[in-house]
Image (cartoon, rainbow, N blue to C red; front, side):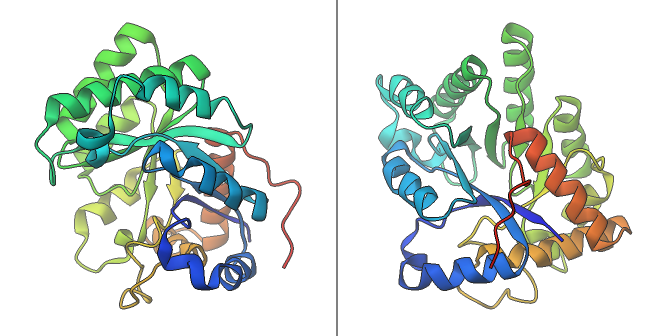
Length: 267
């Protein structure tokens, strides 16, 4: 069974003491590819070094909405564009998006989001979208951008929206990725959303080191091997085998990010 964790942050300090052991565990769990998201462009060199160390790792470059206020500048577009073109292992722009839960600089976030959408469109790369308490505005911005510039491909990562909101982004052609939150007992709207996403549009992730899934929820650090628990829960919700869910999500990740799993990583 092959799995792809489509959103990790293994450059964070929480992983530094035992990253080789963590990699052994994700390989033993069948994780054959990982997509490393980027919170801010200054992470790029460190993430690229991790990809040198772990050949199953591919990565993105972008600016998280909660960092826009302090780190978005007139040079940000050229910086992200240059970095994205500097390495063939860059498979996406992001993570980017809107977060109205923790920040109120809505206009500035929208400006940075649209600019990064334009970079992705120029490079024909997918986007990794962070959306928290902003689904309606997010859908409006995406609709307008697509009307003006054409279709953008991408994923709504760590999705926690309602089934109605899920439908908005499916209609826009986006993939929907579920994280450890889908394993939480009271996450009813996420469960419902996981049931309705078409089989060719569903993805799985850990968003590690955050949001460890059940049965690891009490642990302070999530890790890529735990994507297997996300896969099992999503499979149960959709009433399919975990093997089928793994095959679908692996195929979808390869389709979206231009990955291949023909050369498998061995333990």
